[in-house]
Length: 79
Image (cartoon, rainbow, N blue to C red; front, side, top):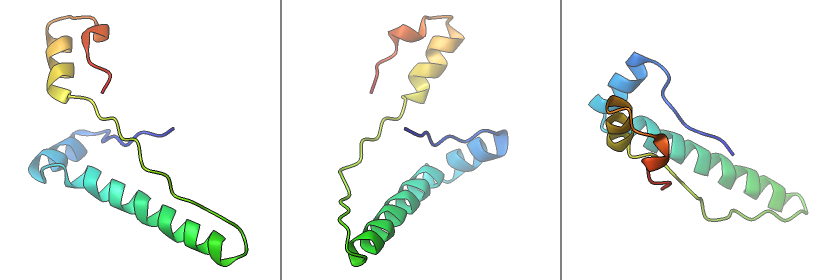
């Protein structure tokens, strides 16, 4: 399993200003890579299938609220 995350202030600011574009771009890139790899495998006498993605992203406002108010992170929803 992997995670997409912005790790510096410039990245976070860019995400805010671009209204989530960095994550949408990462999703698009990942899906494109999967499609091309599956096509390559299928073209070379093997079988590949792309499964439906499972995407879980935190509600960042809920995380911020929990951190700001010293709440247990177990109070946050899983999806």
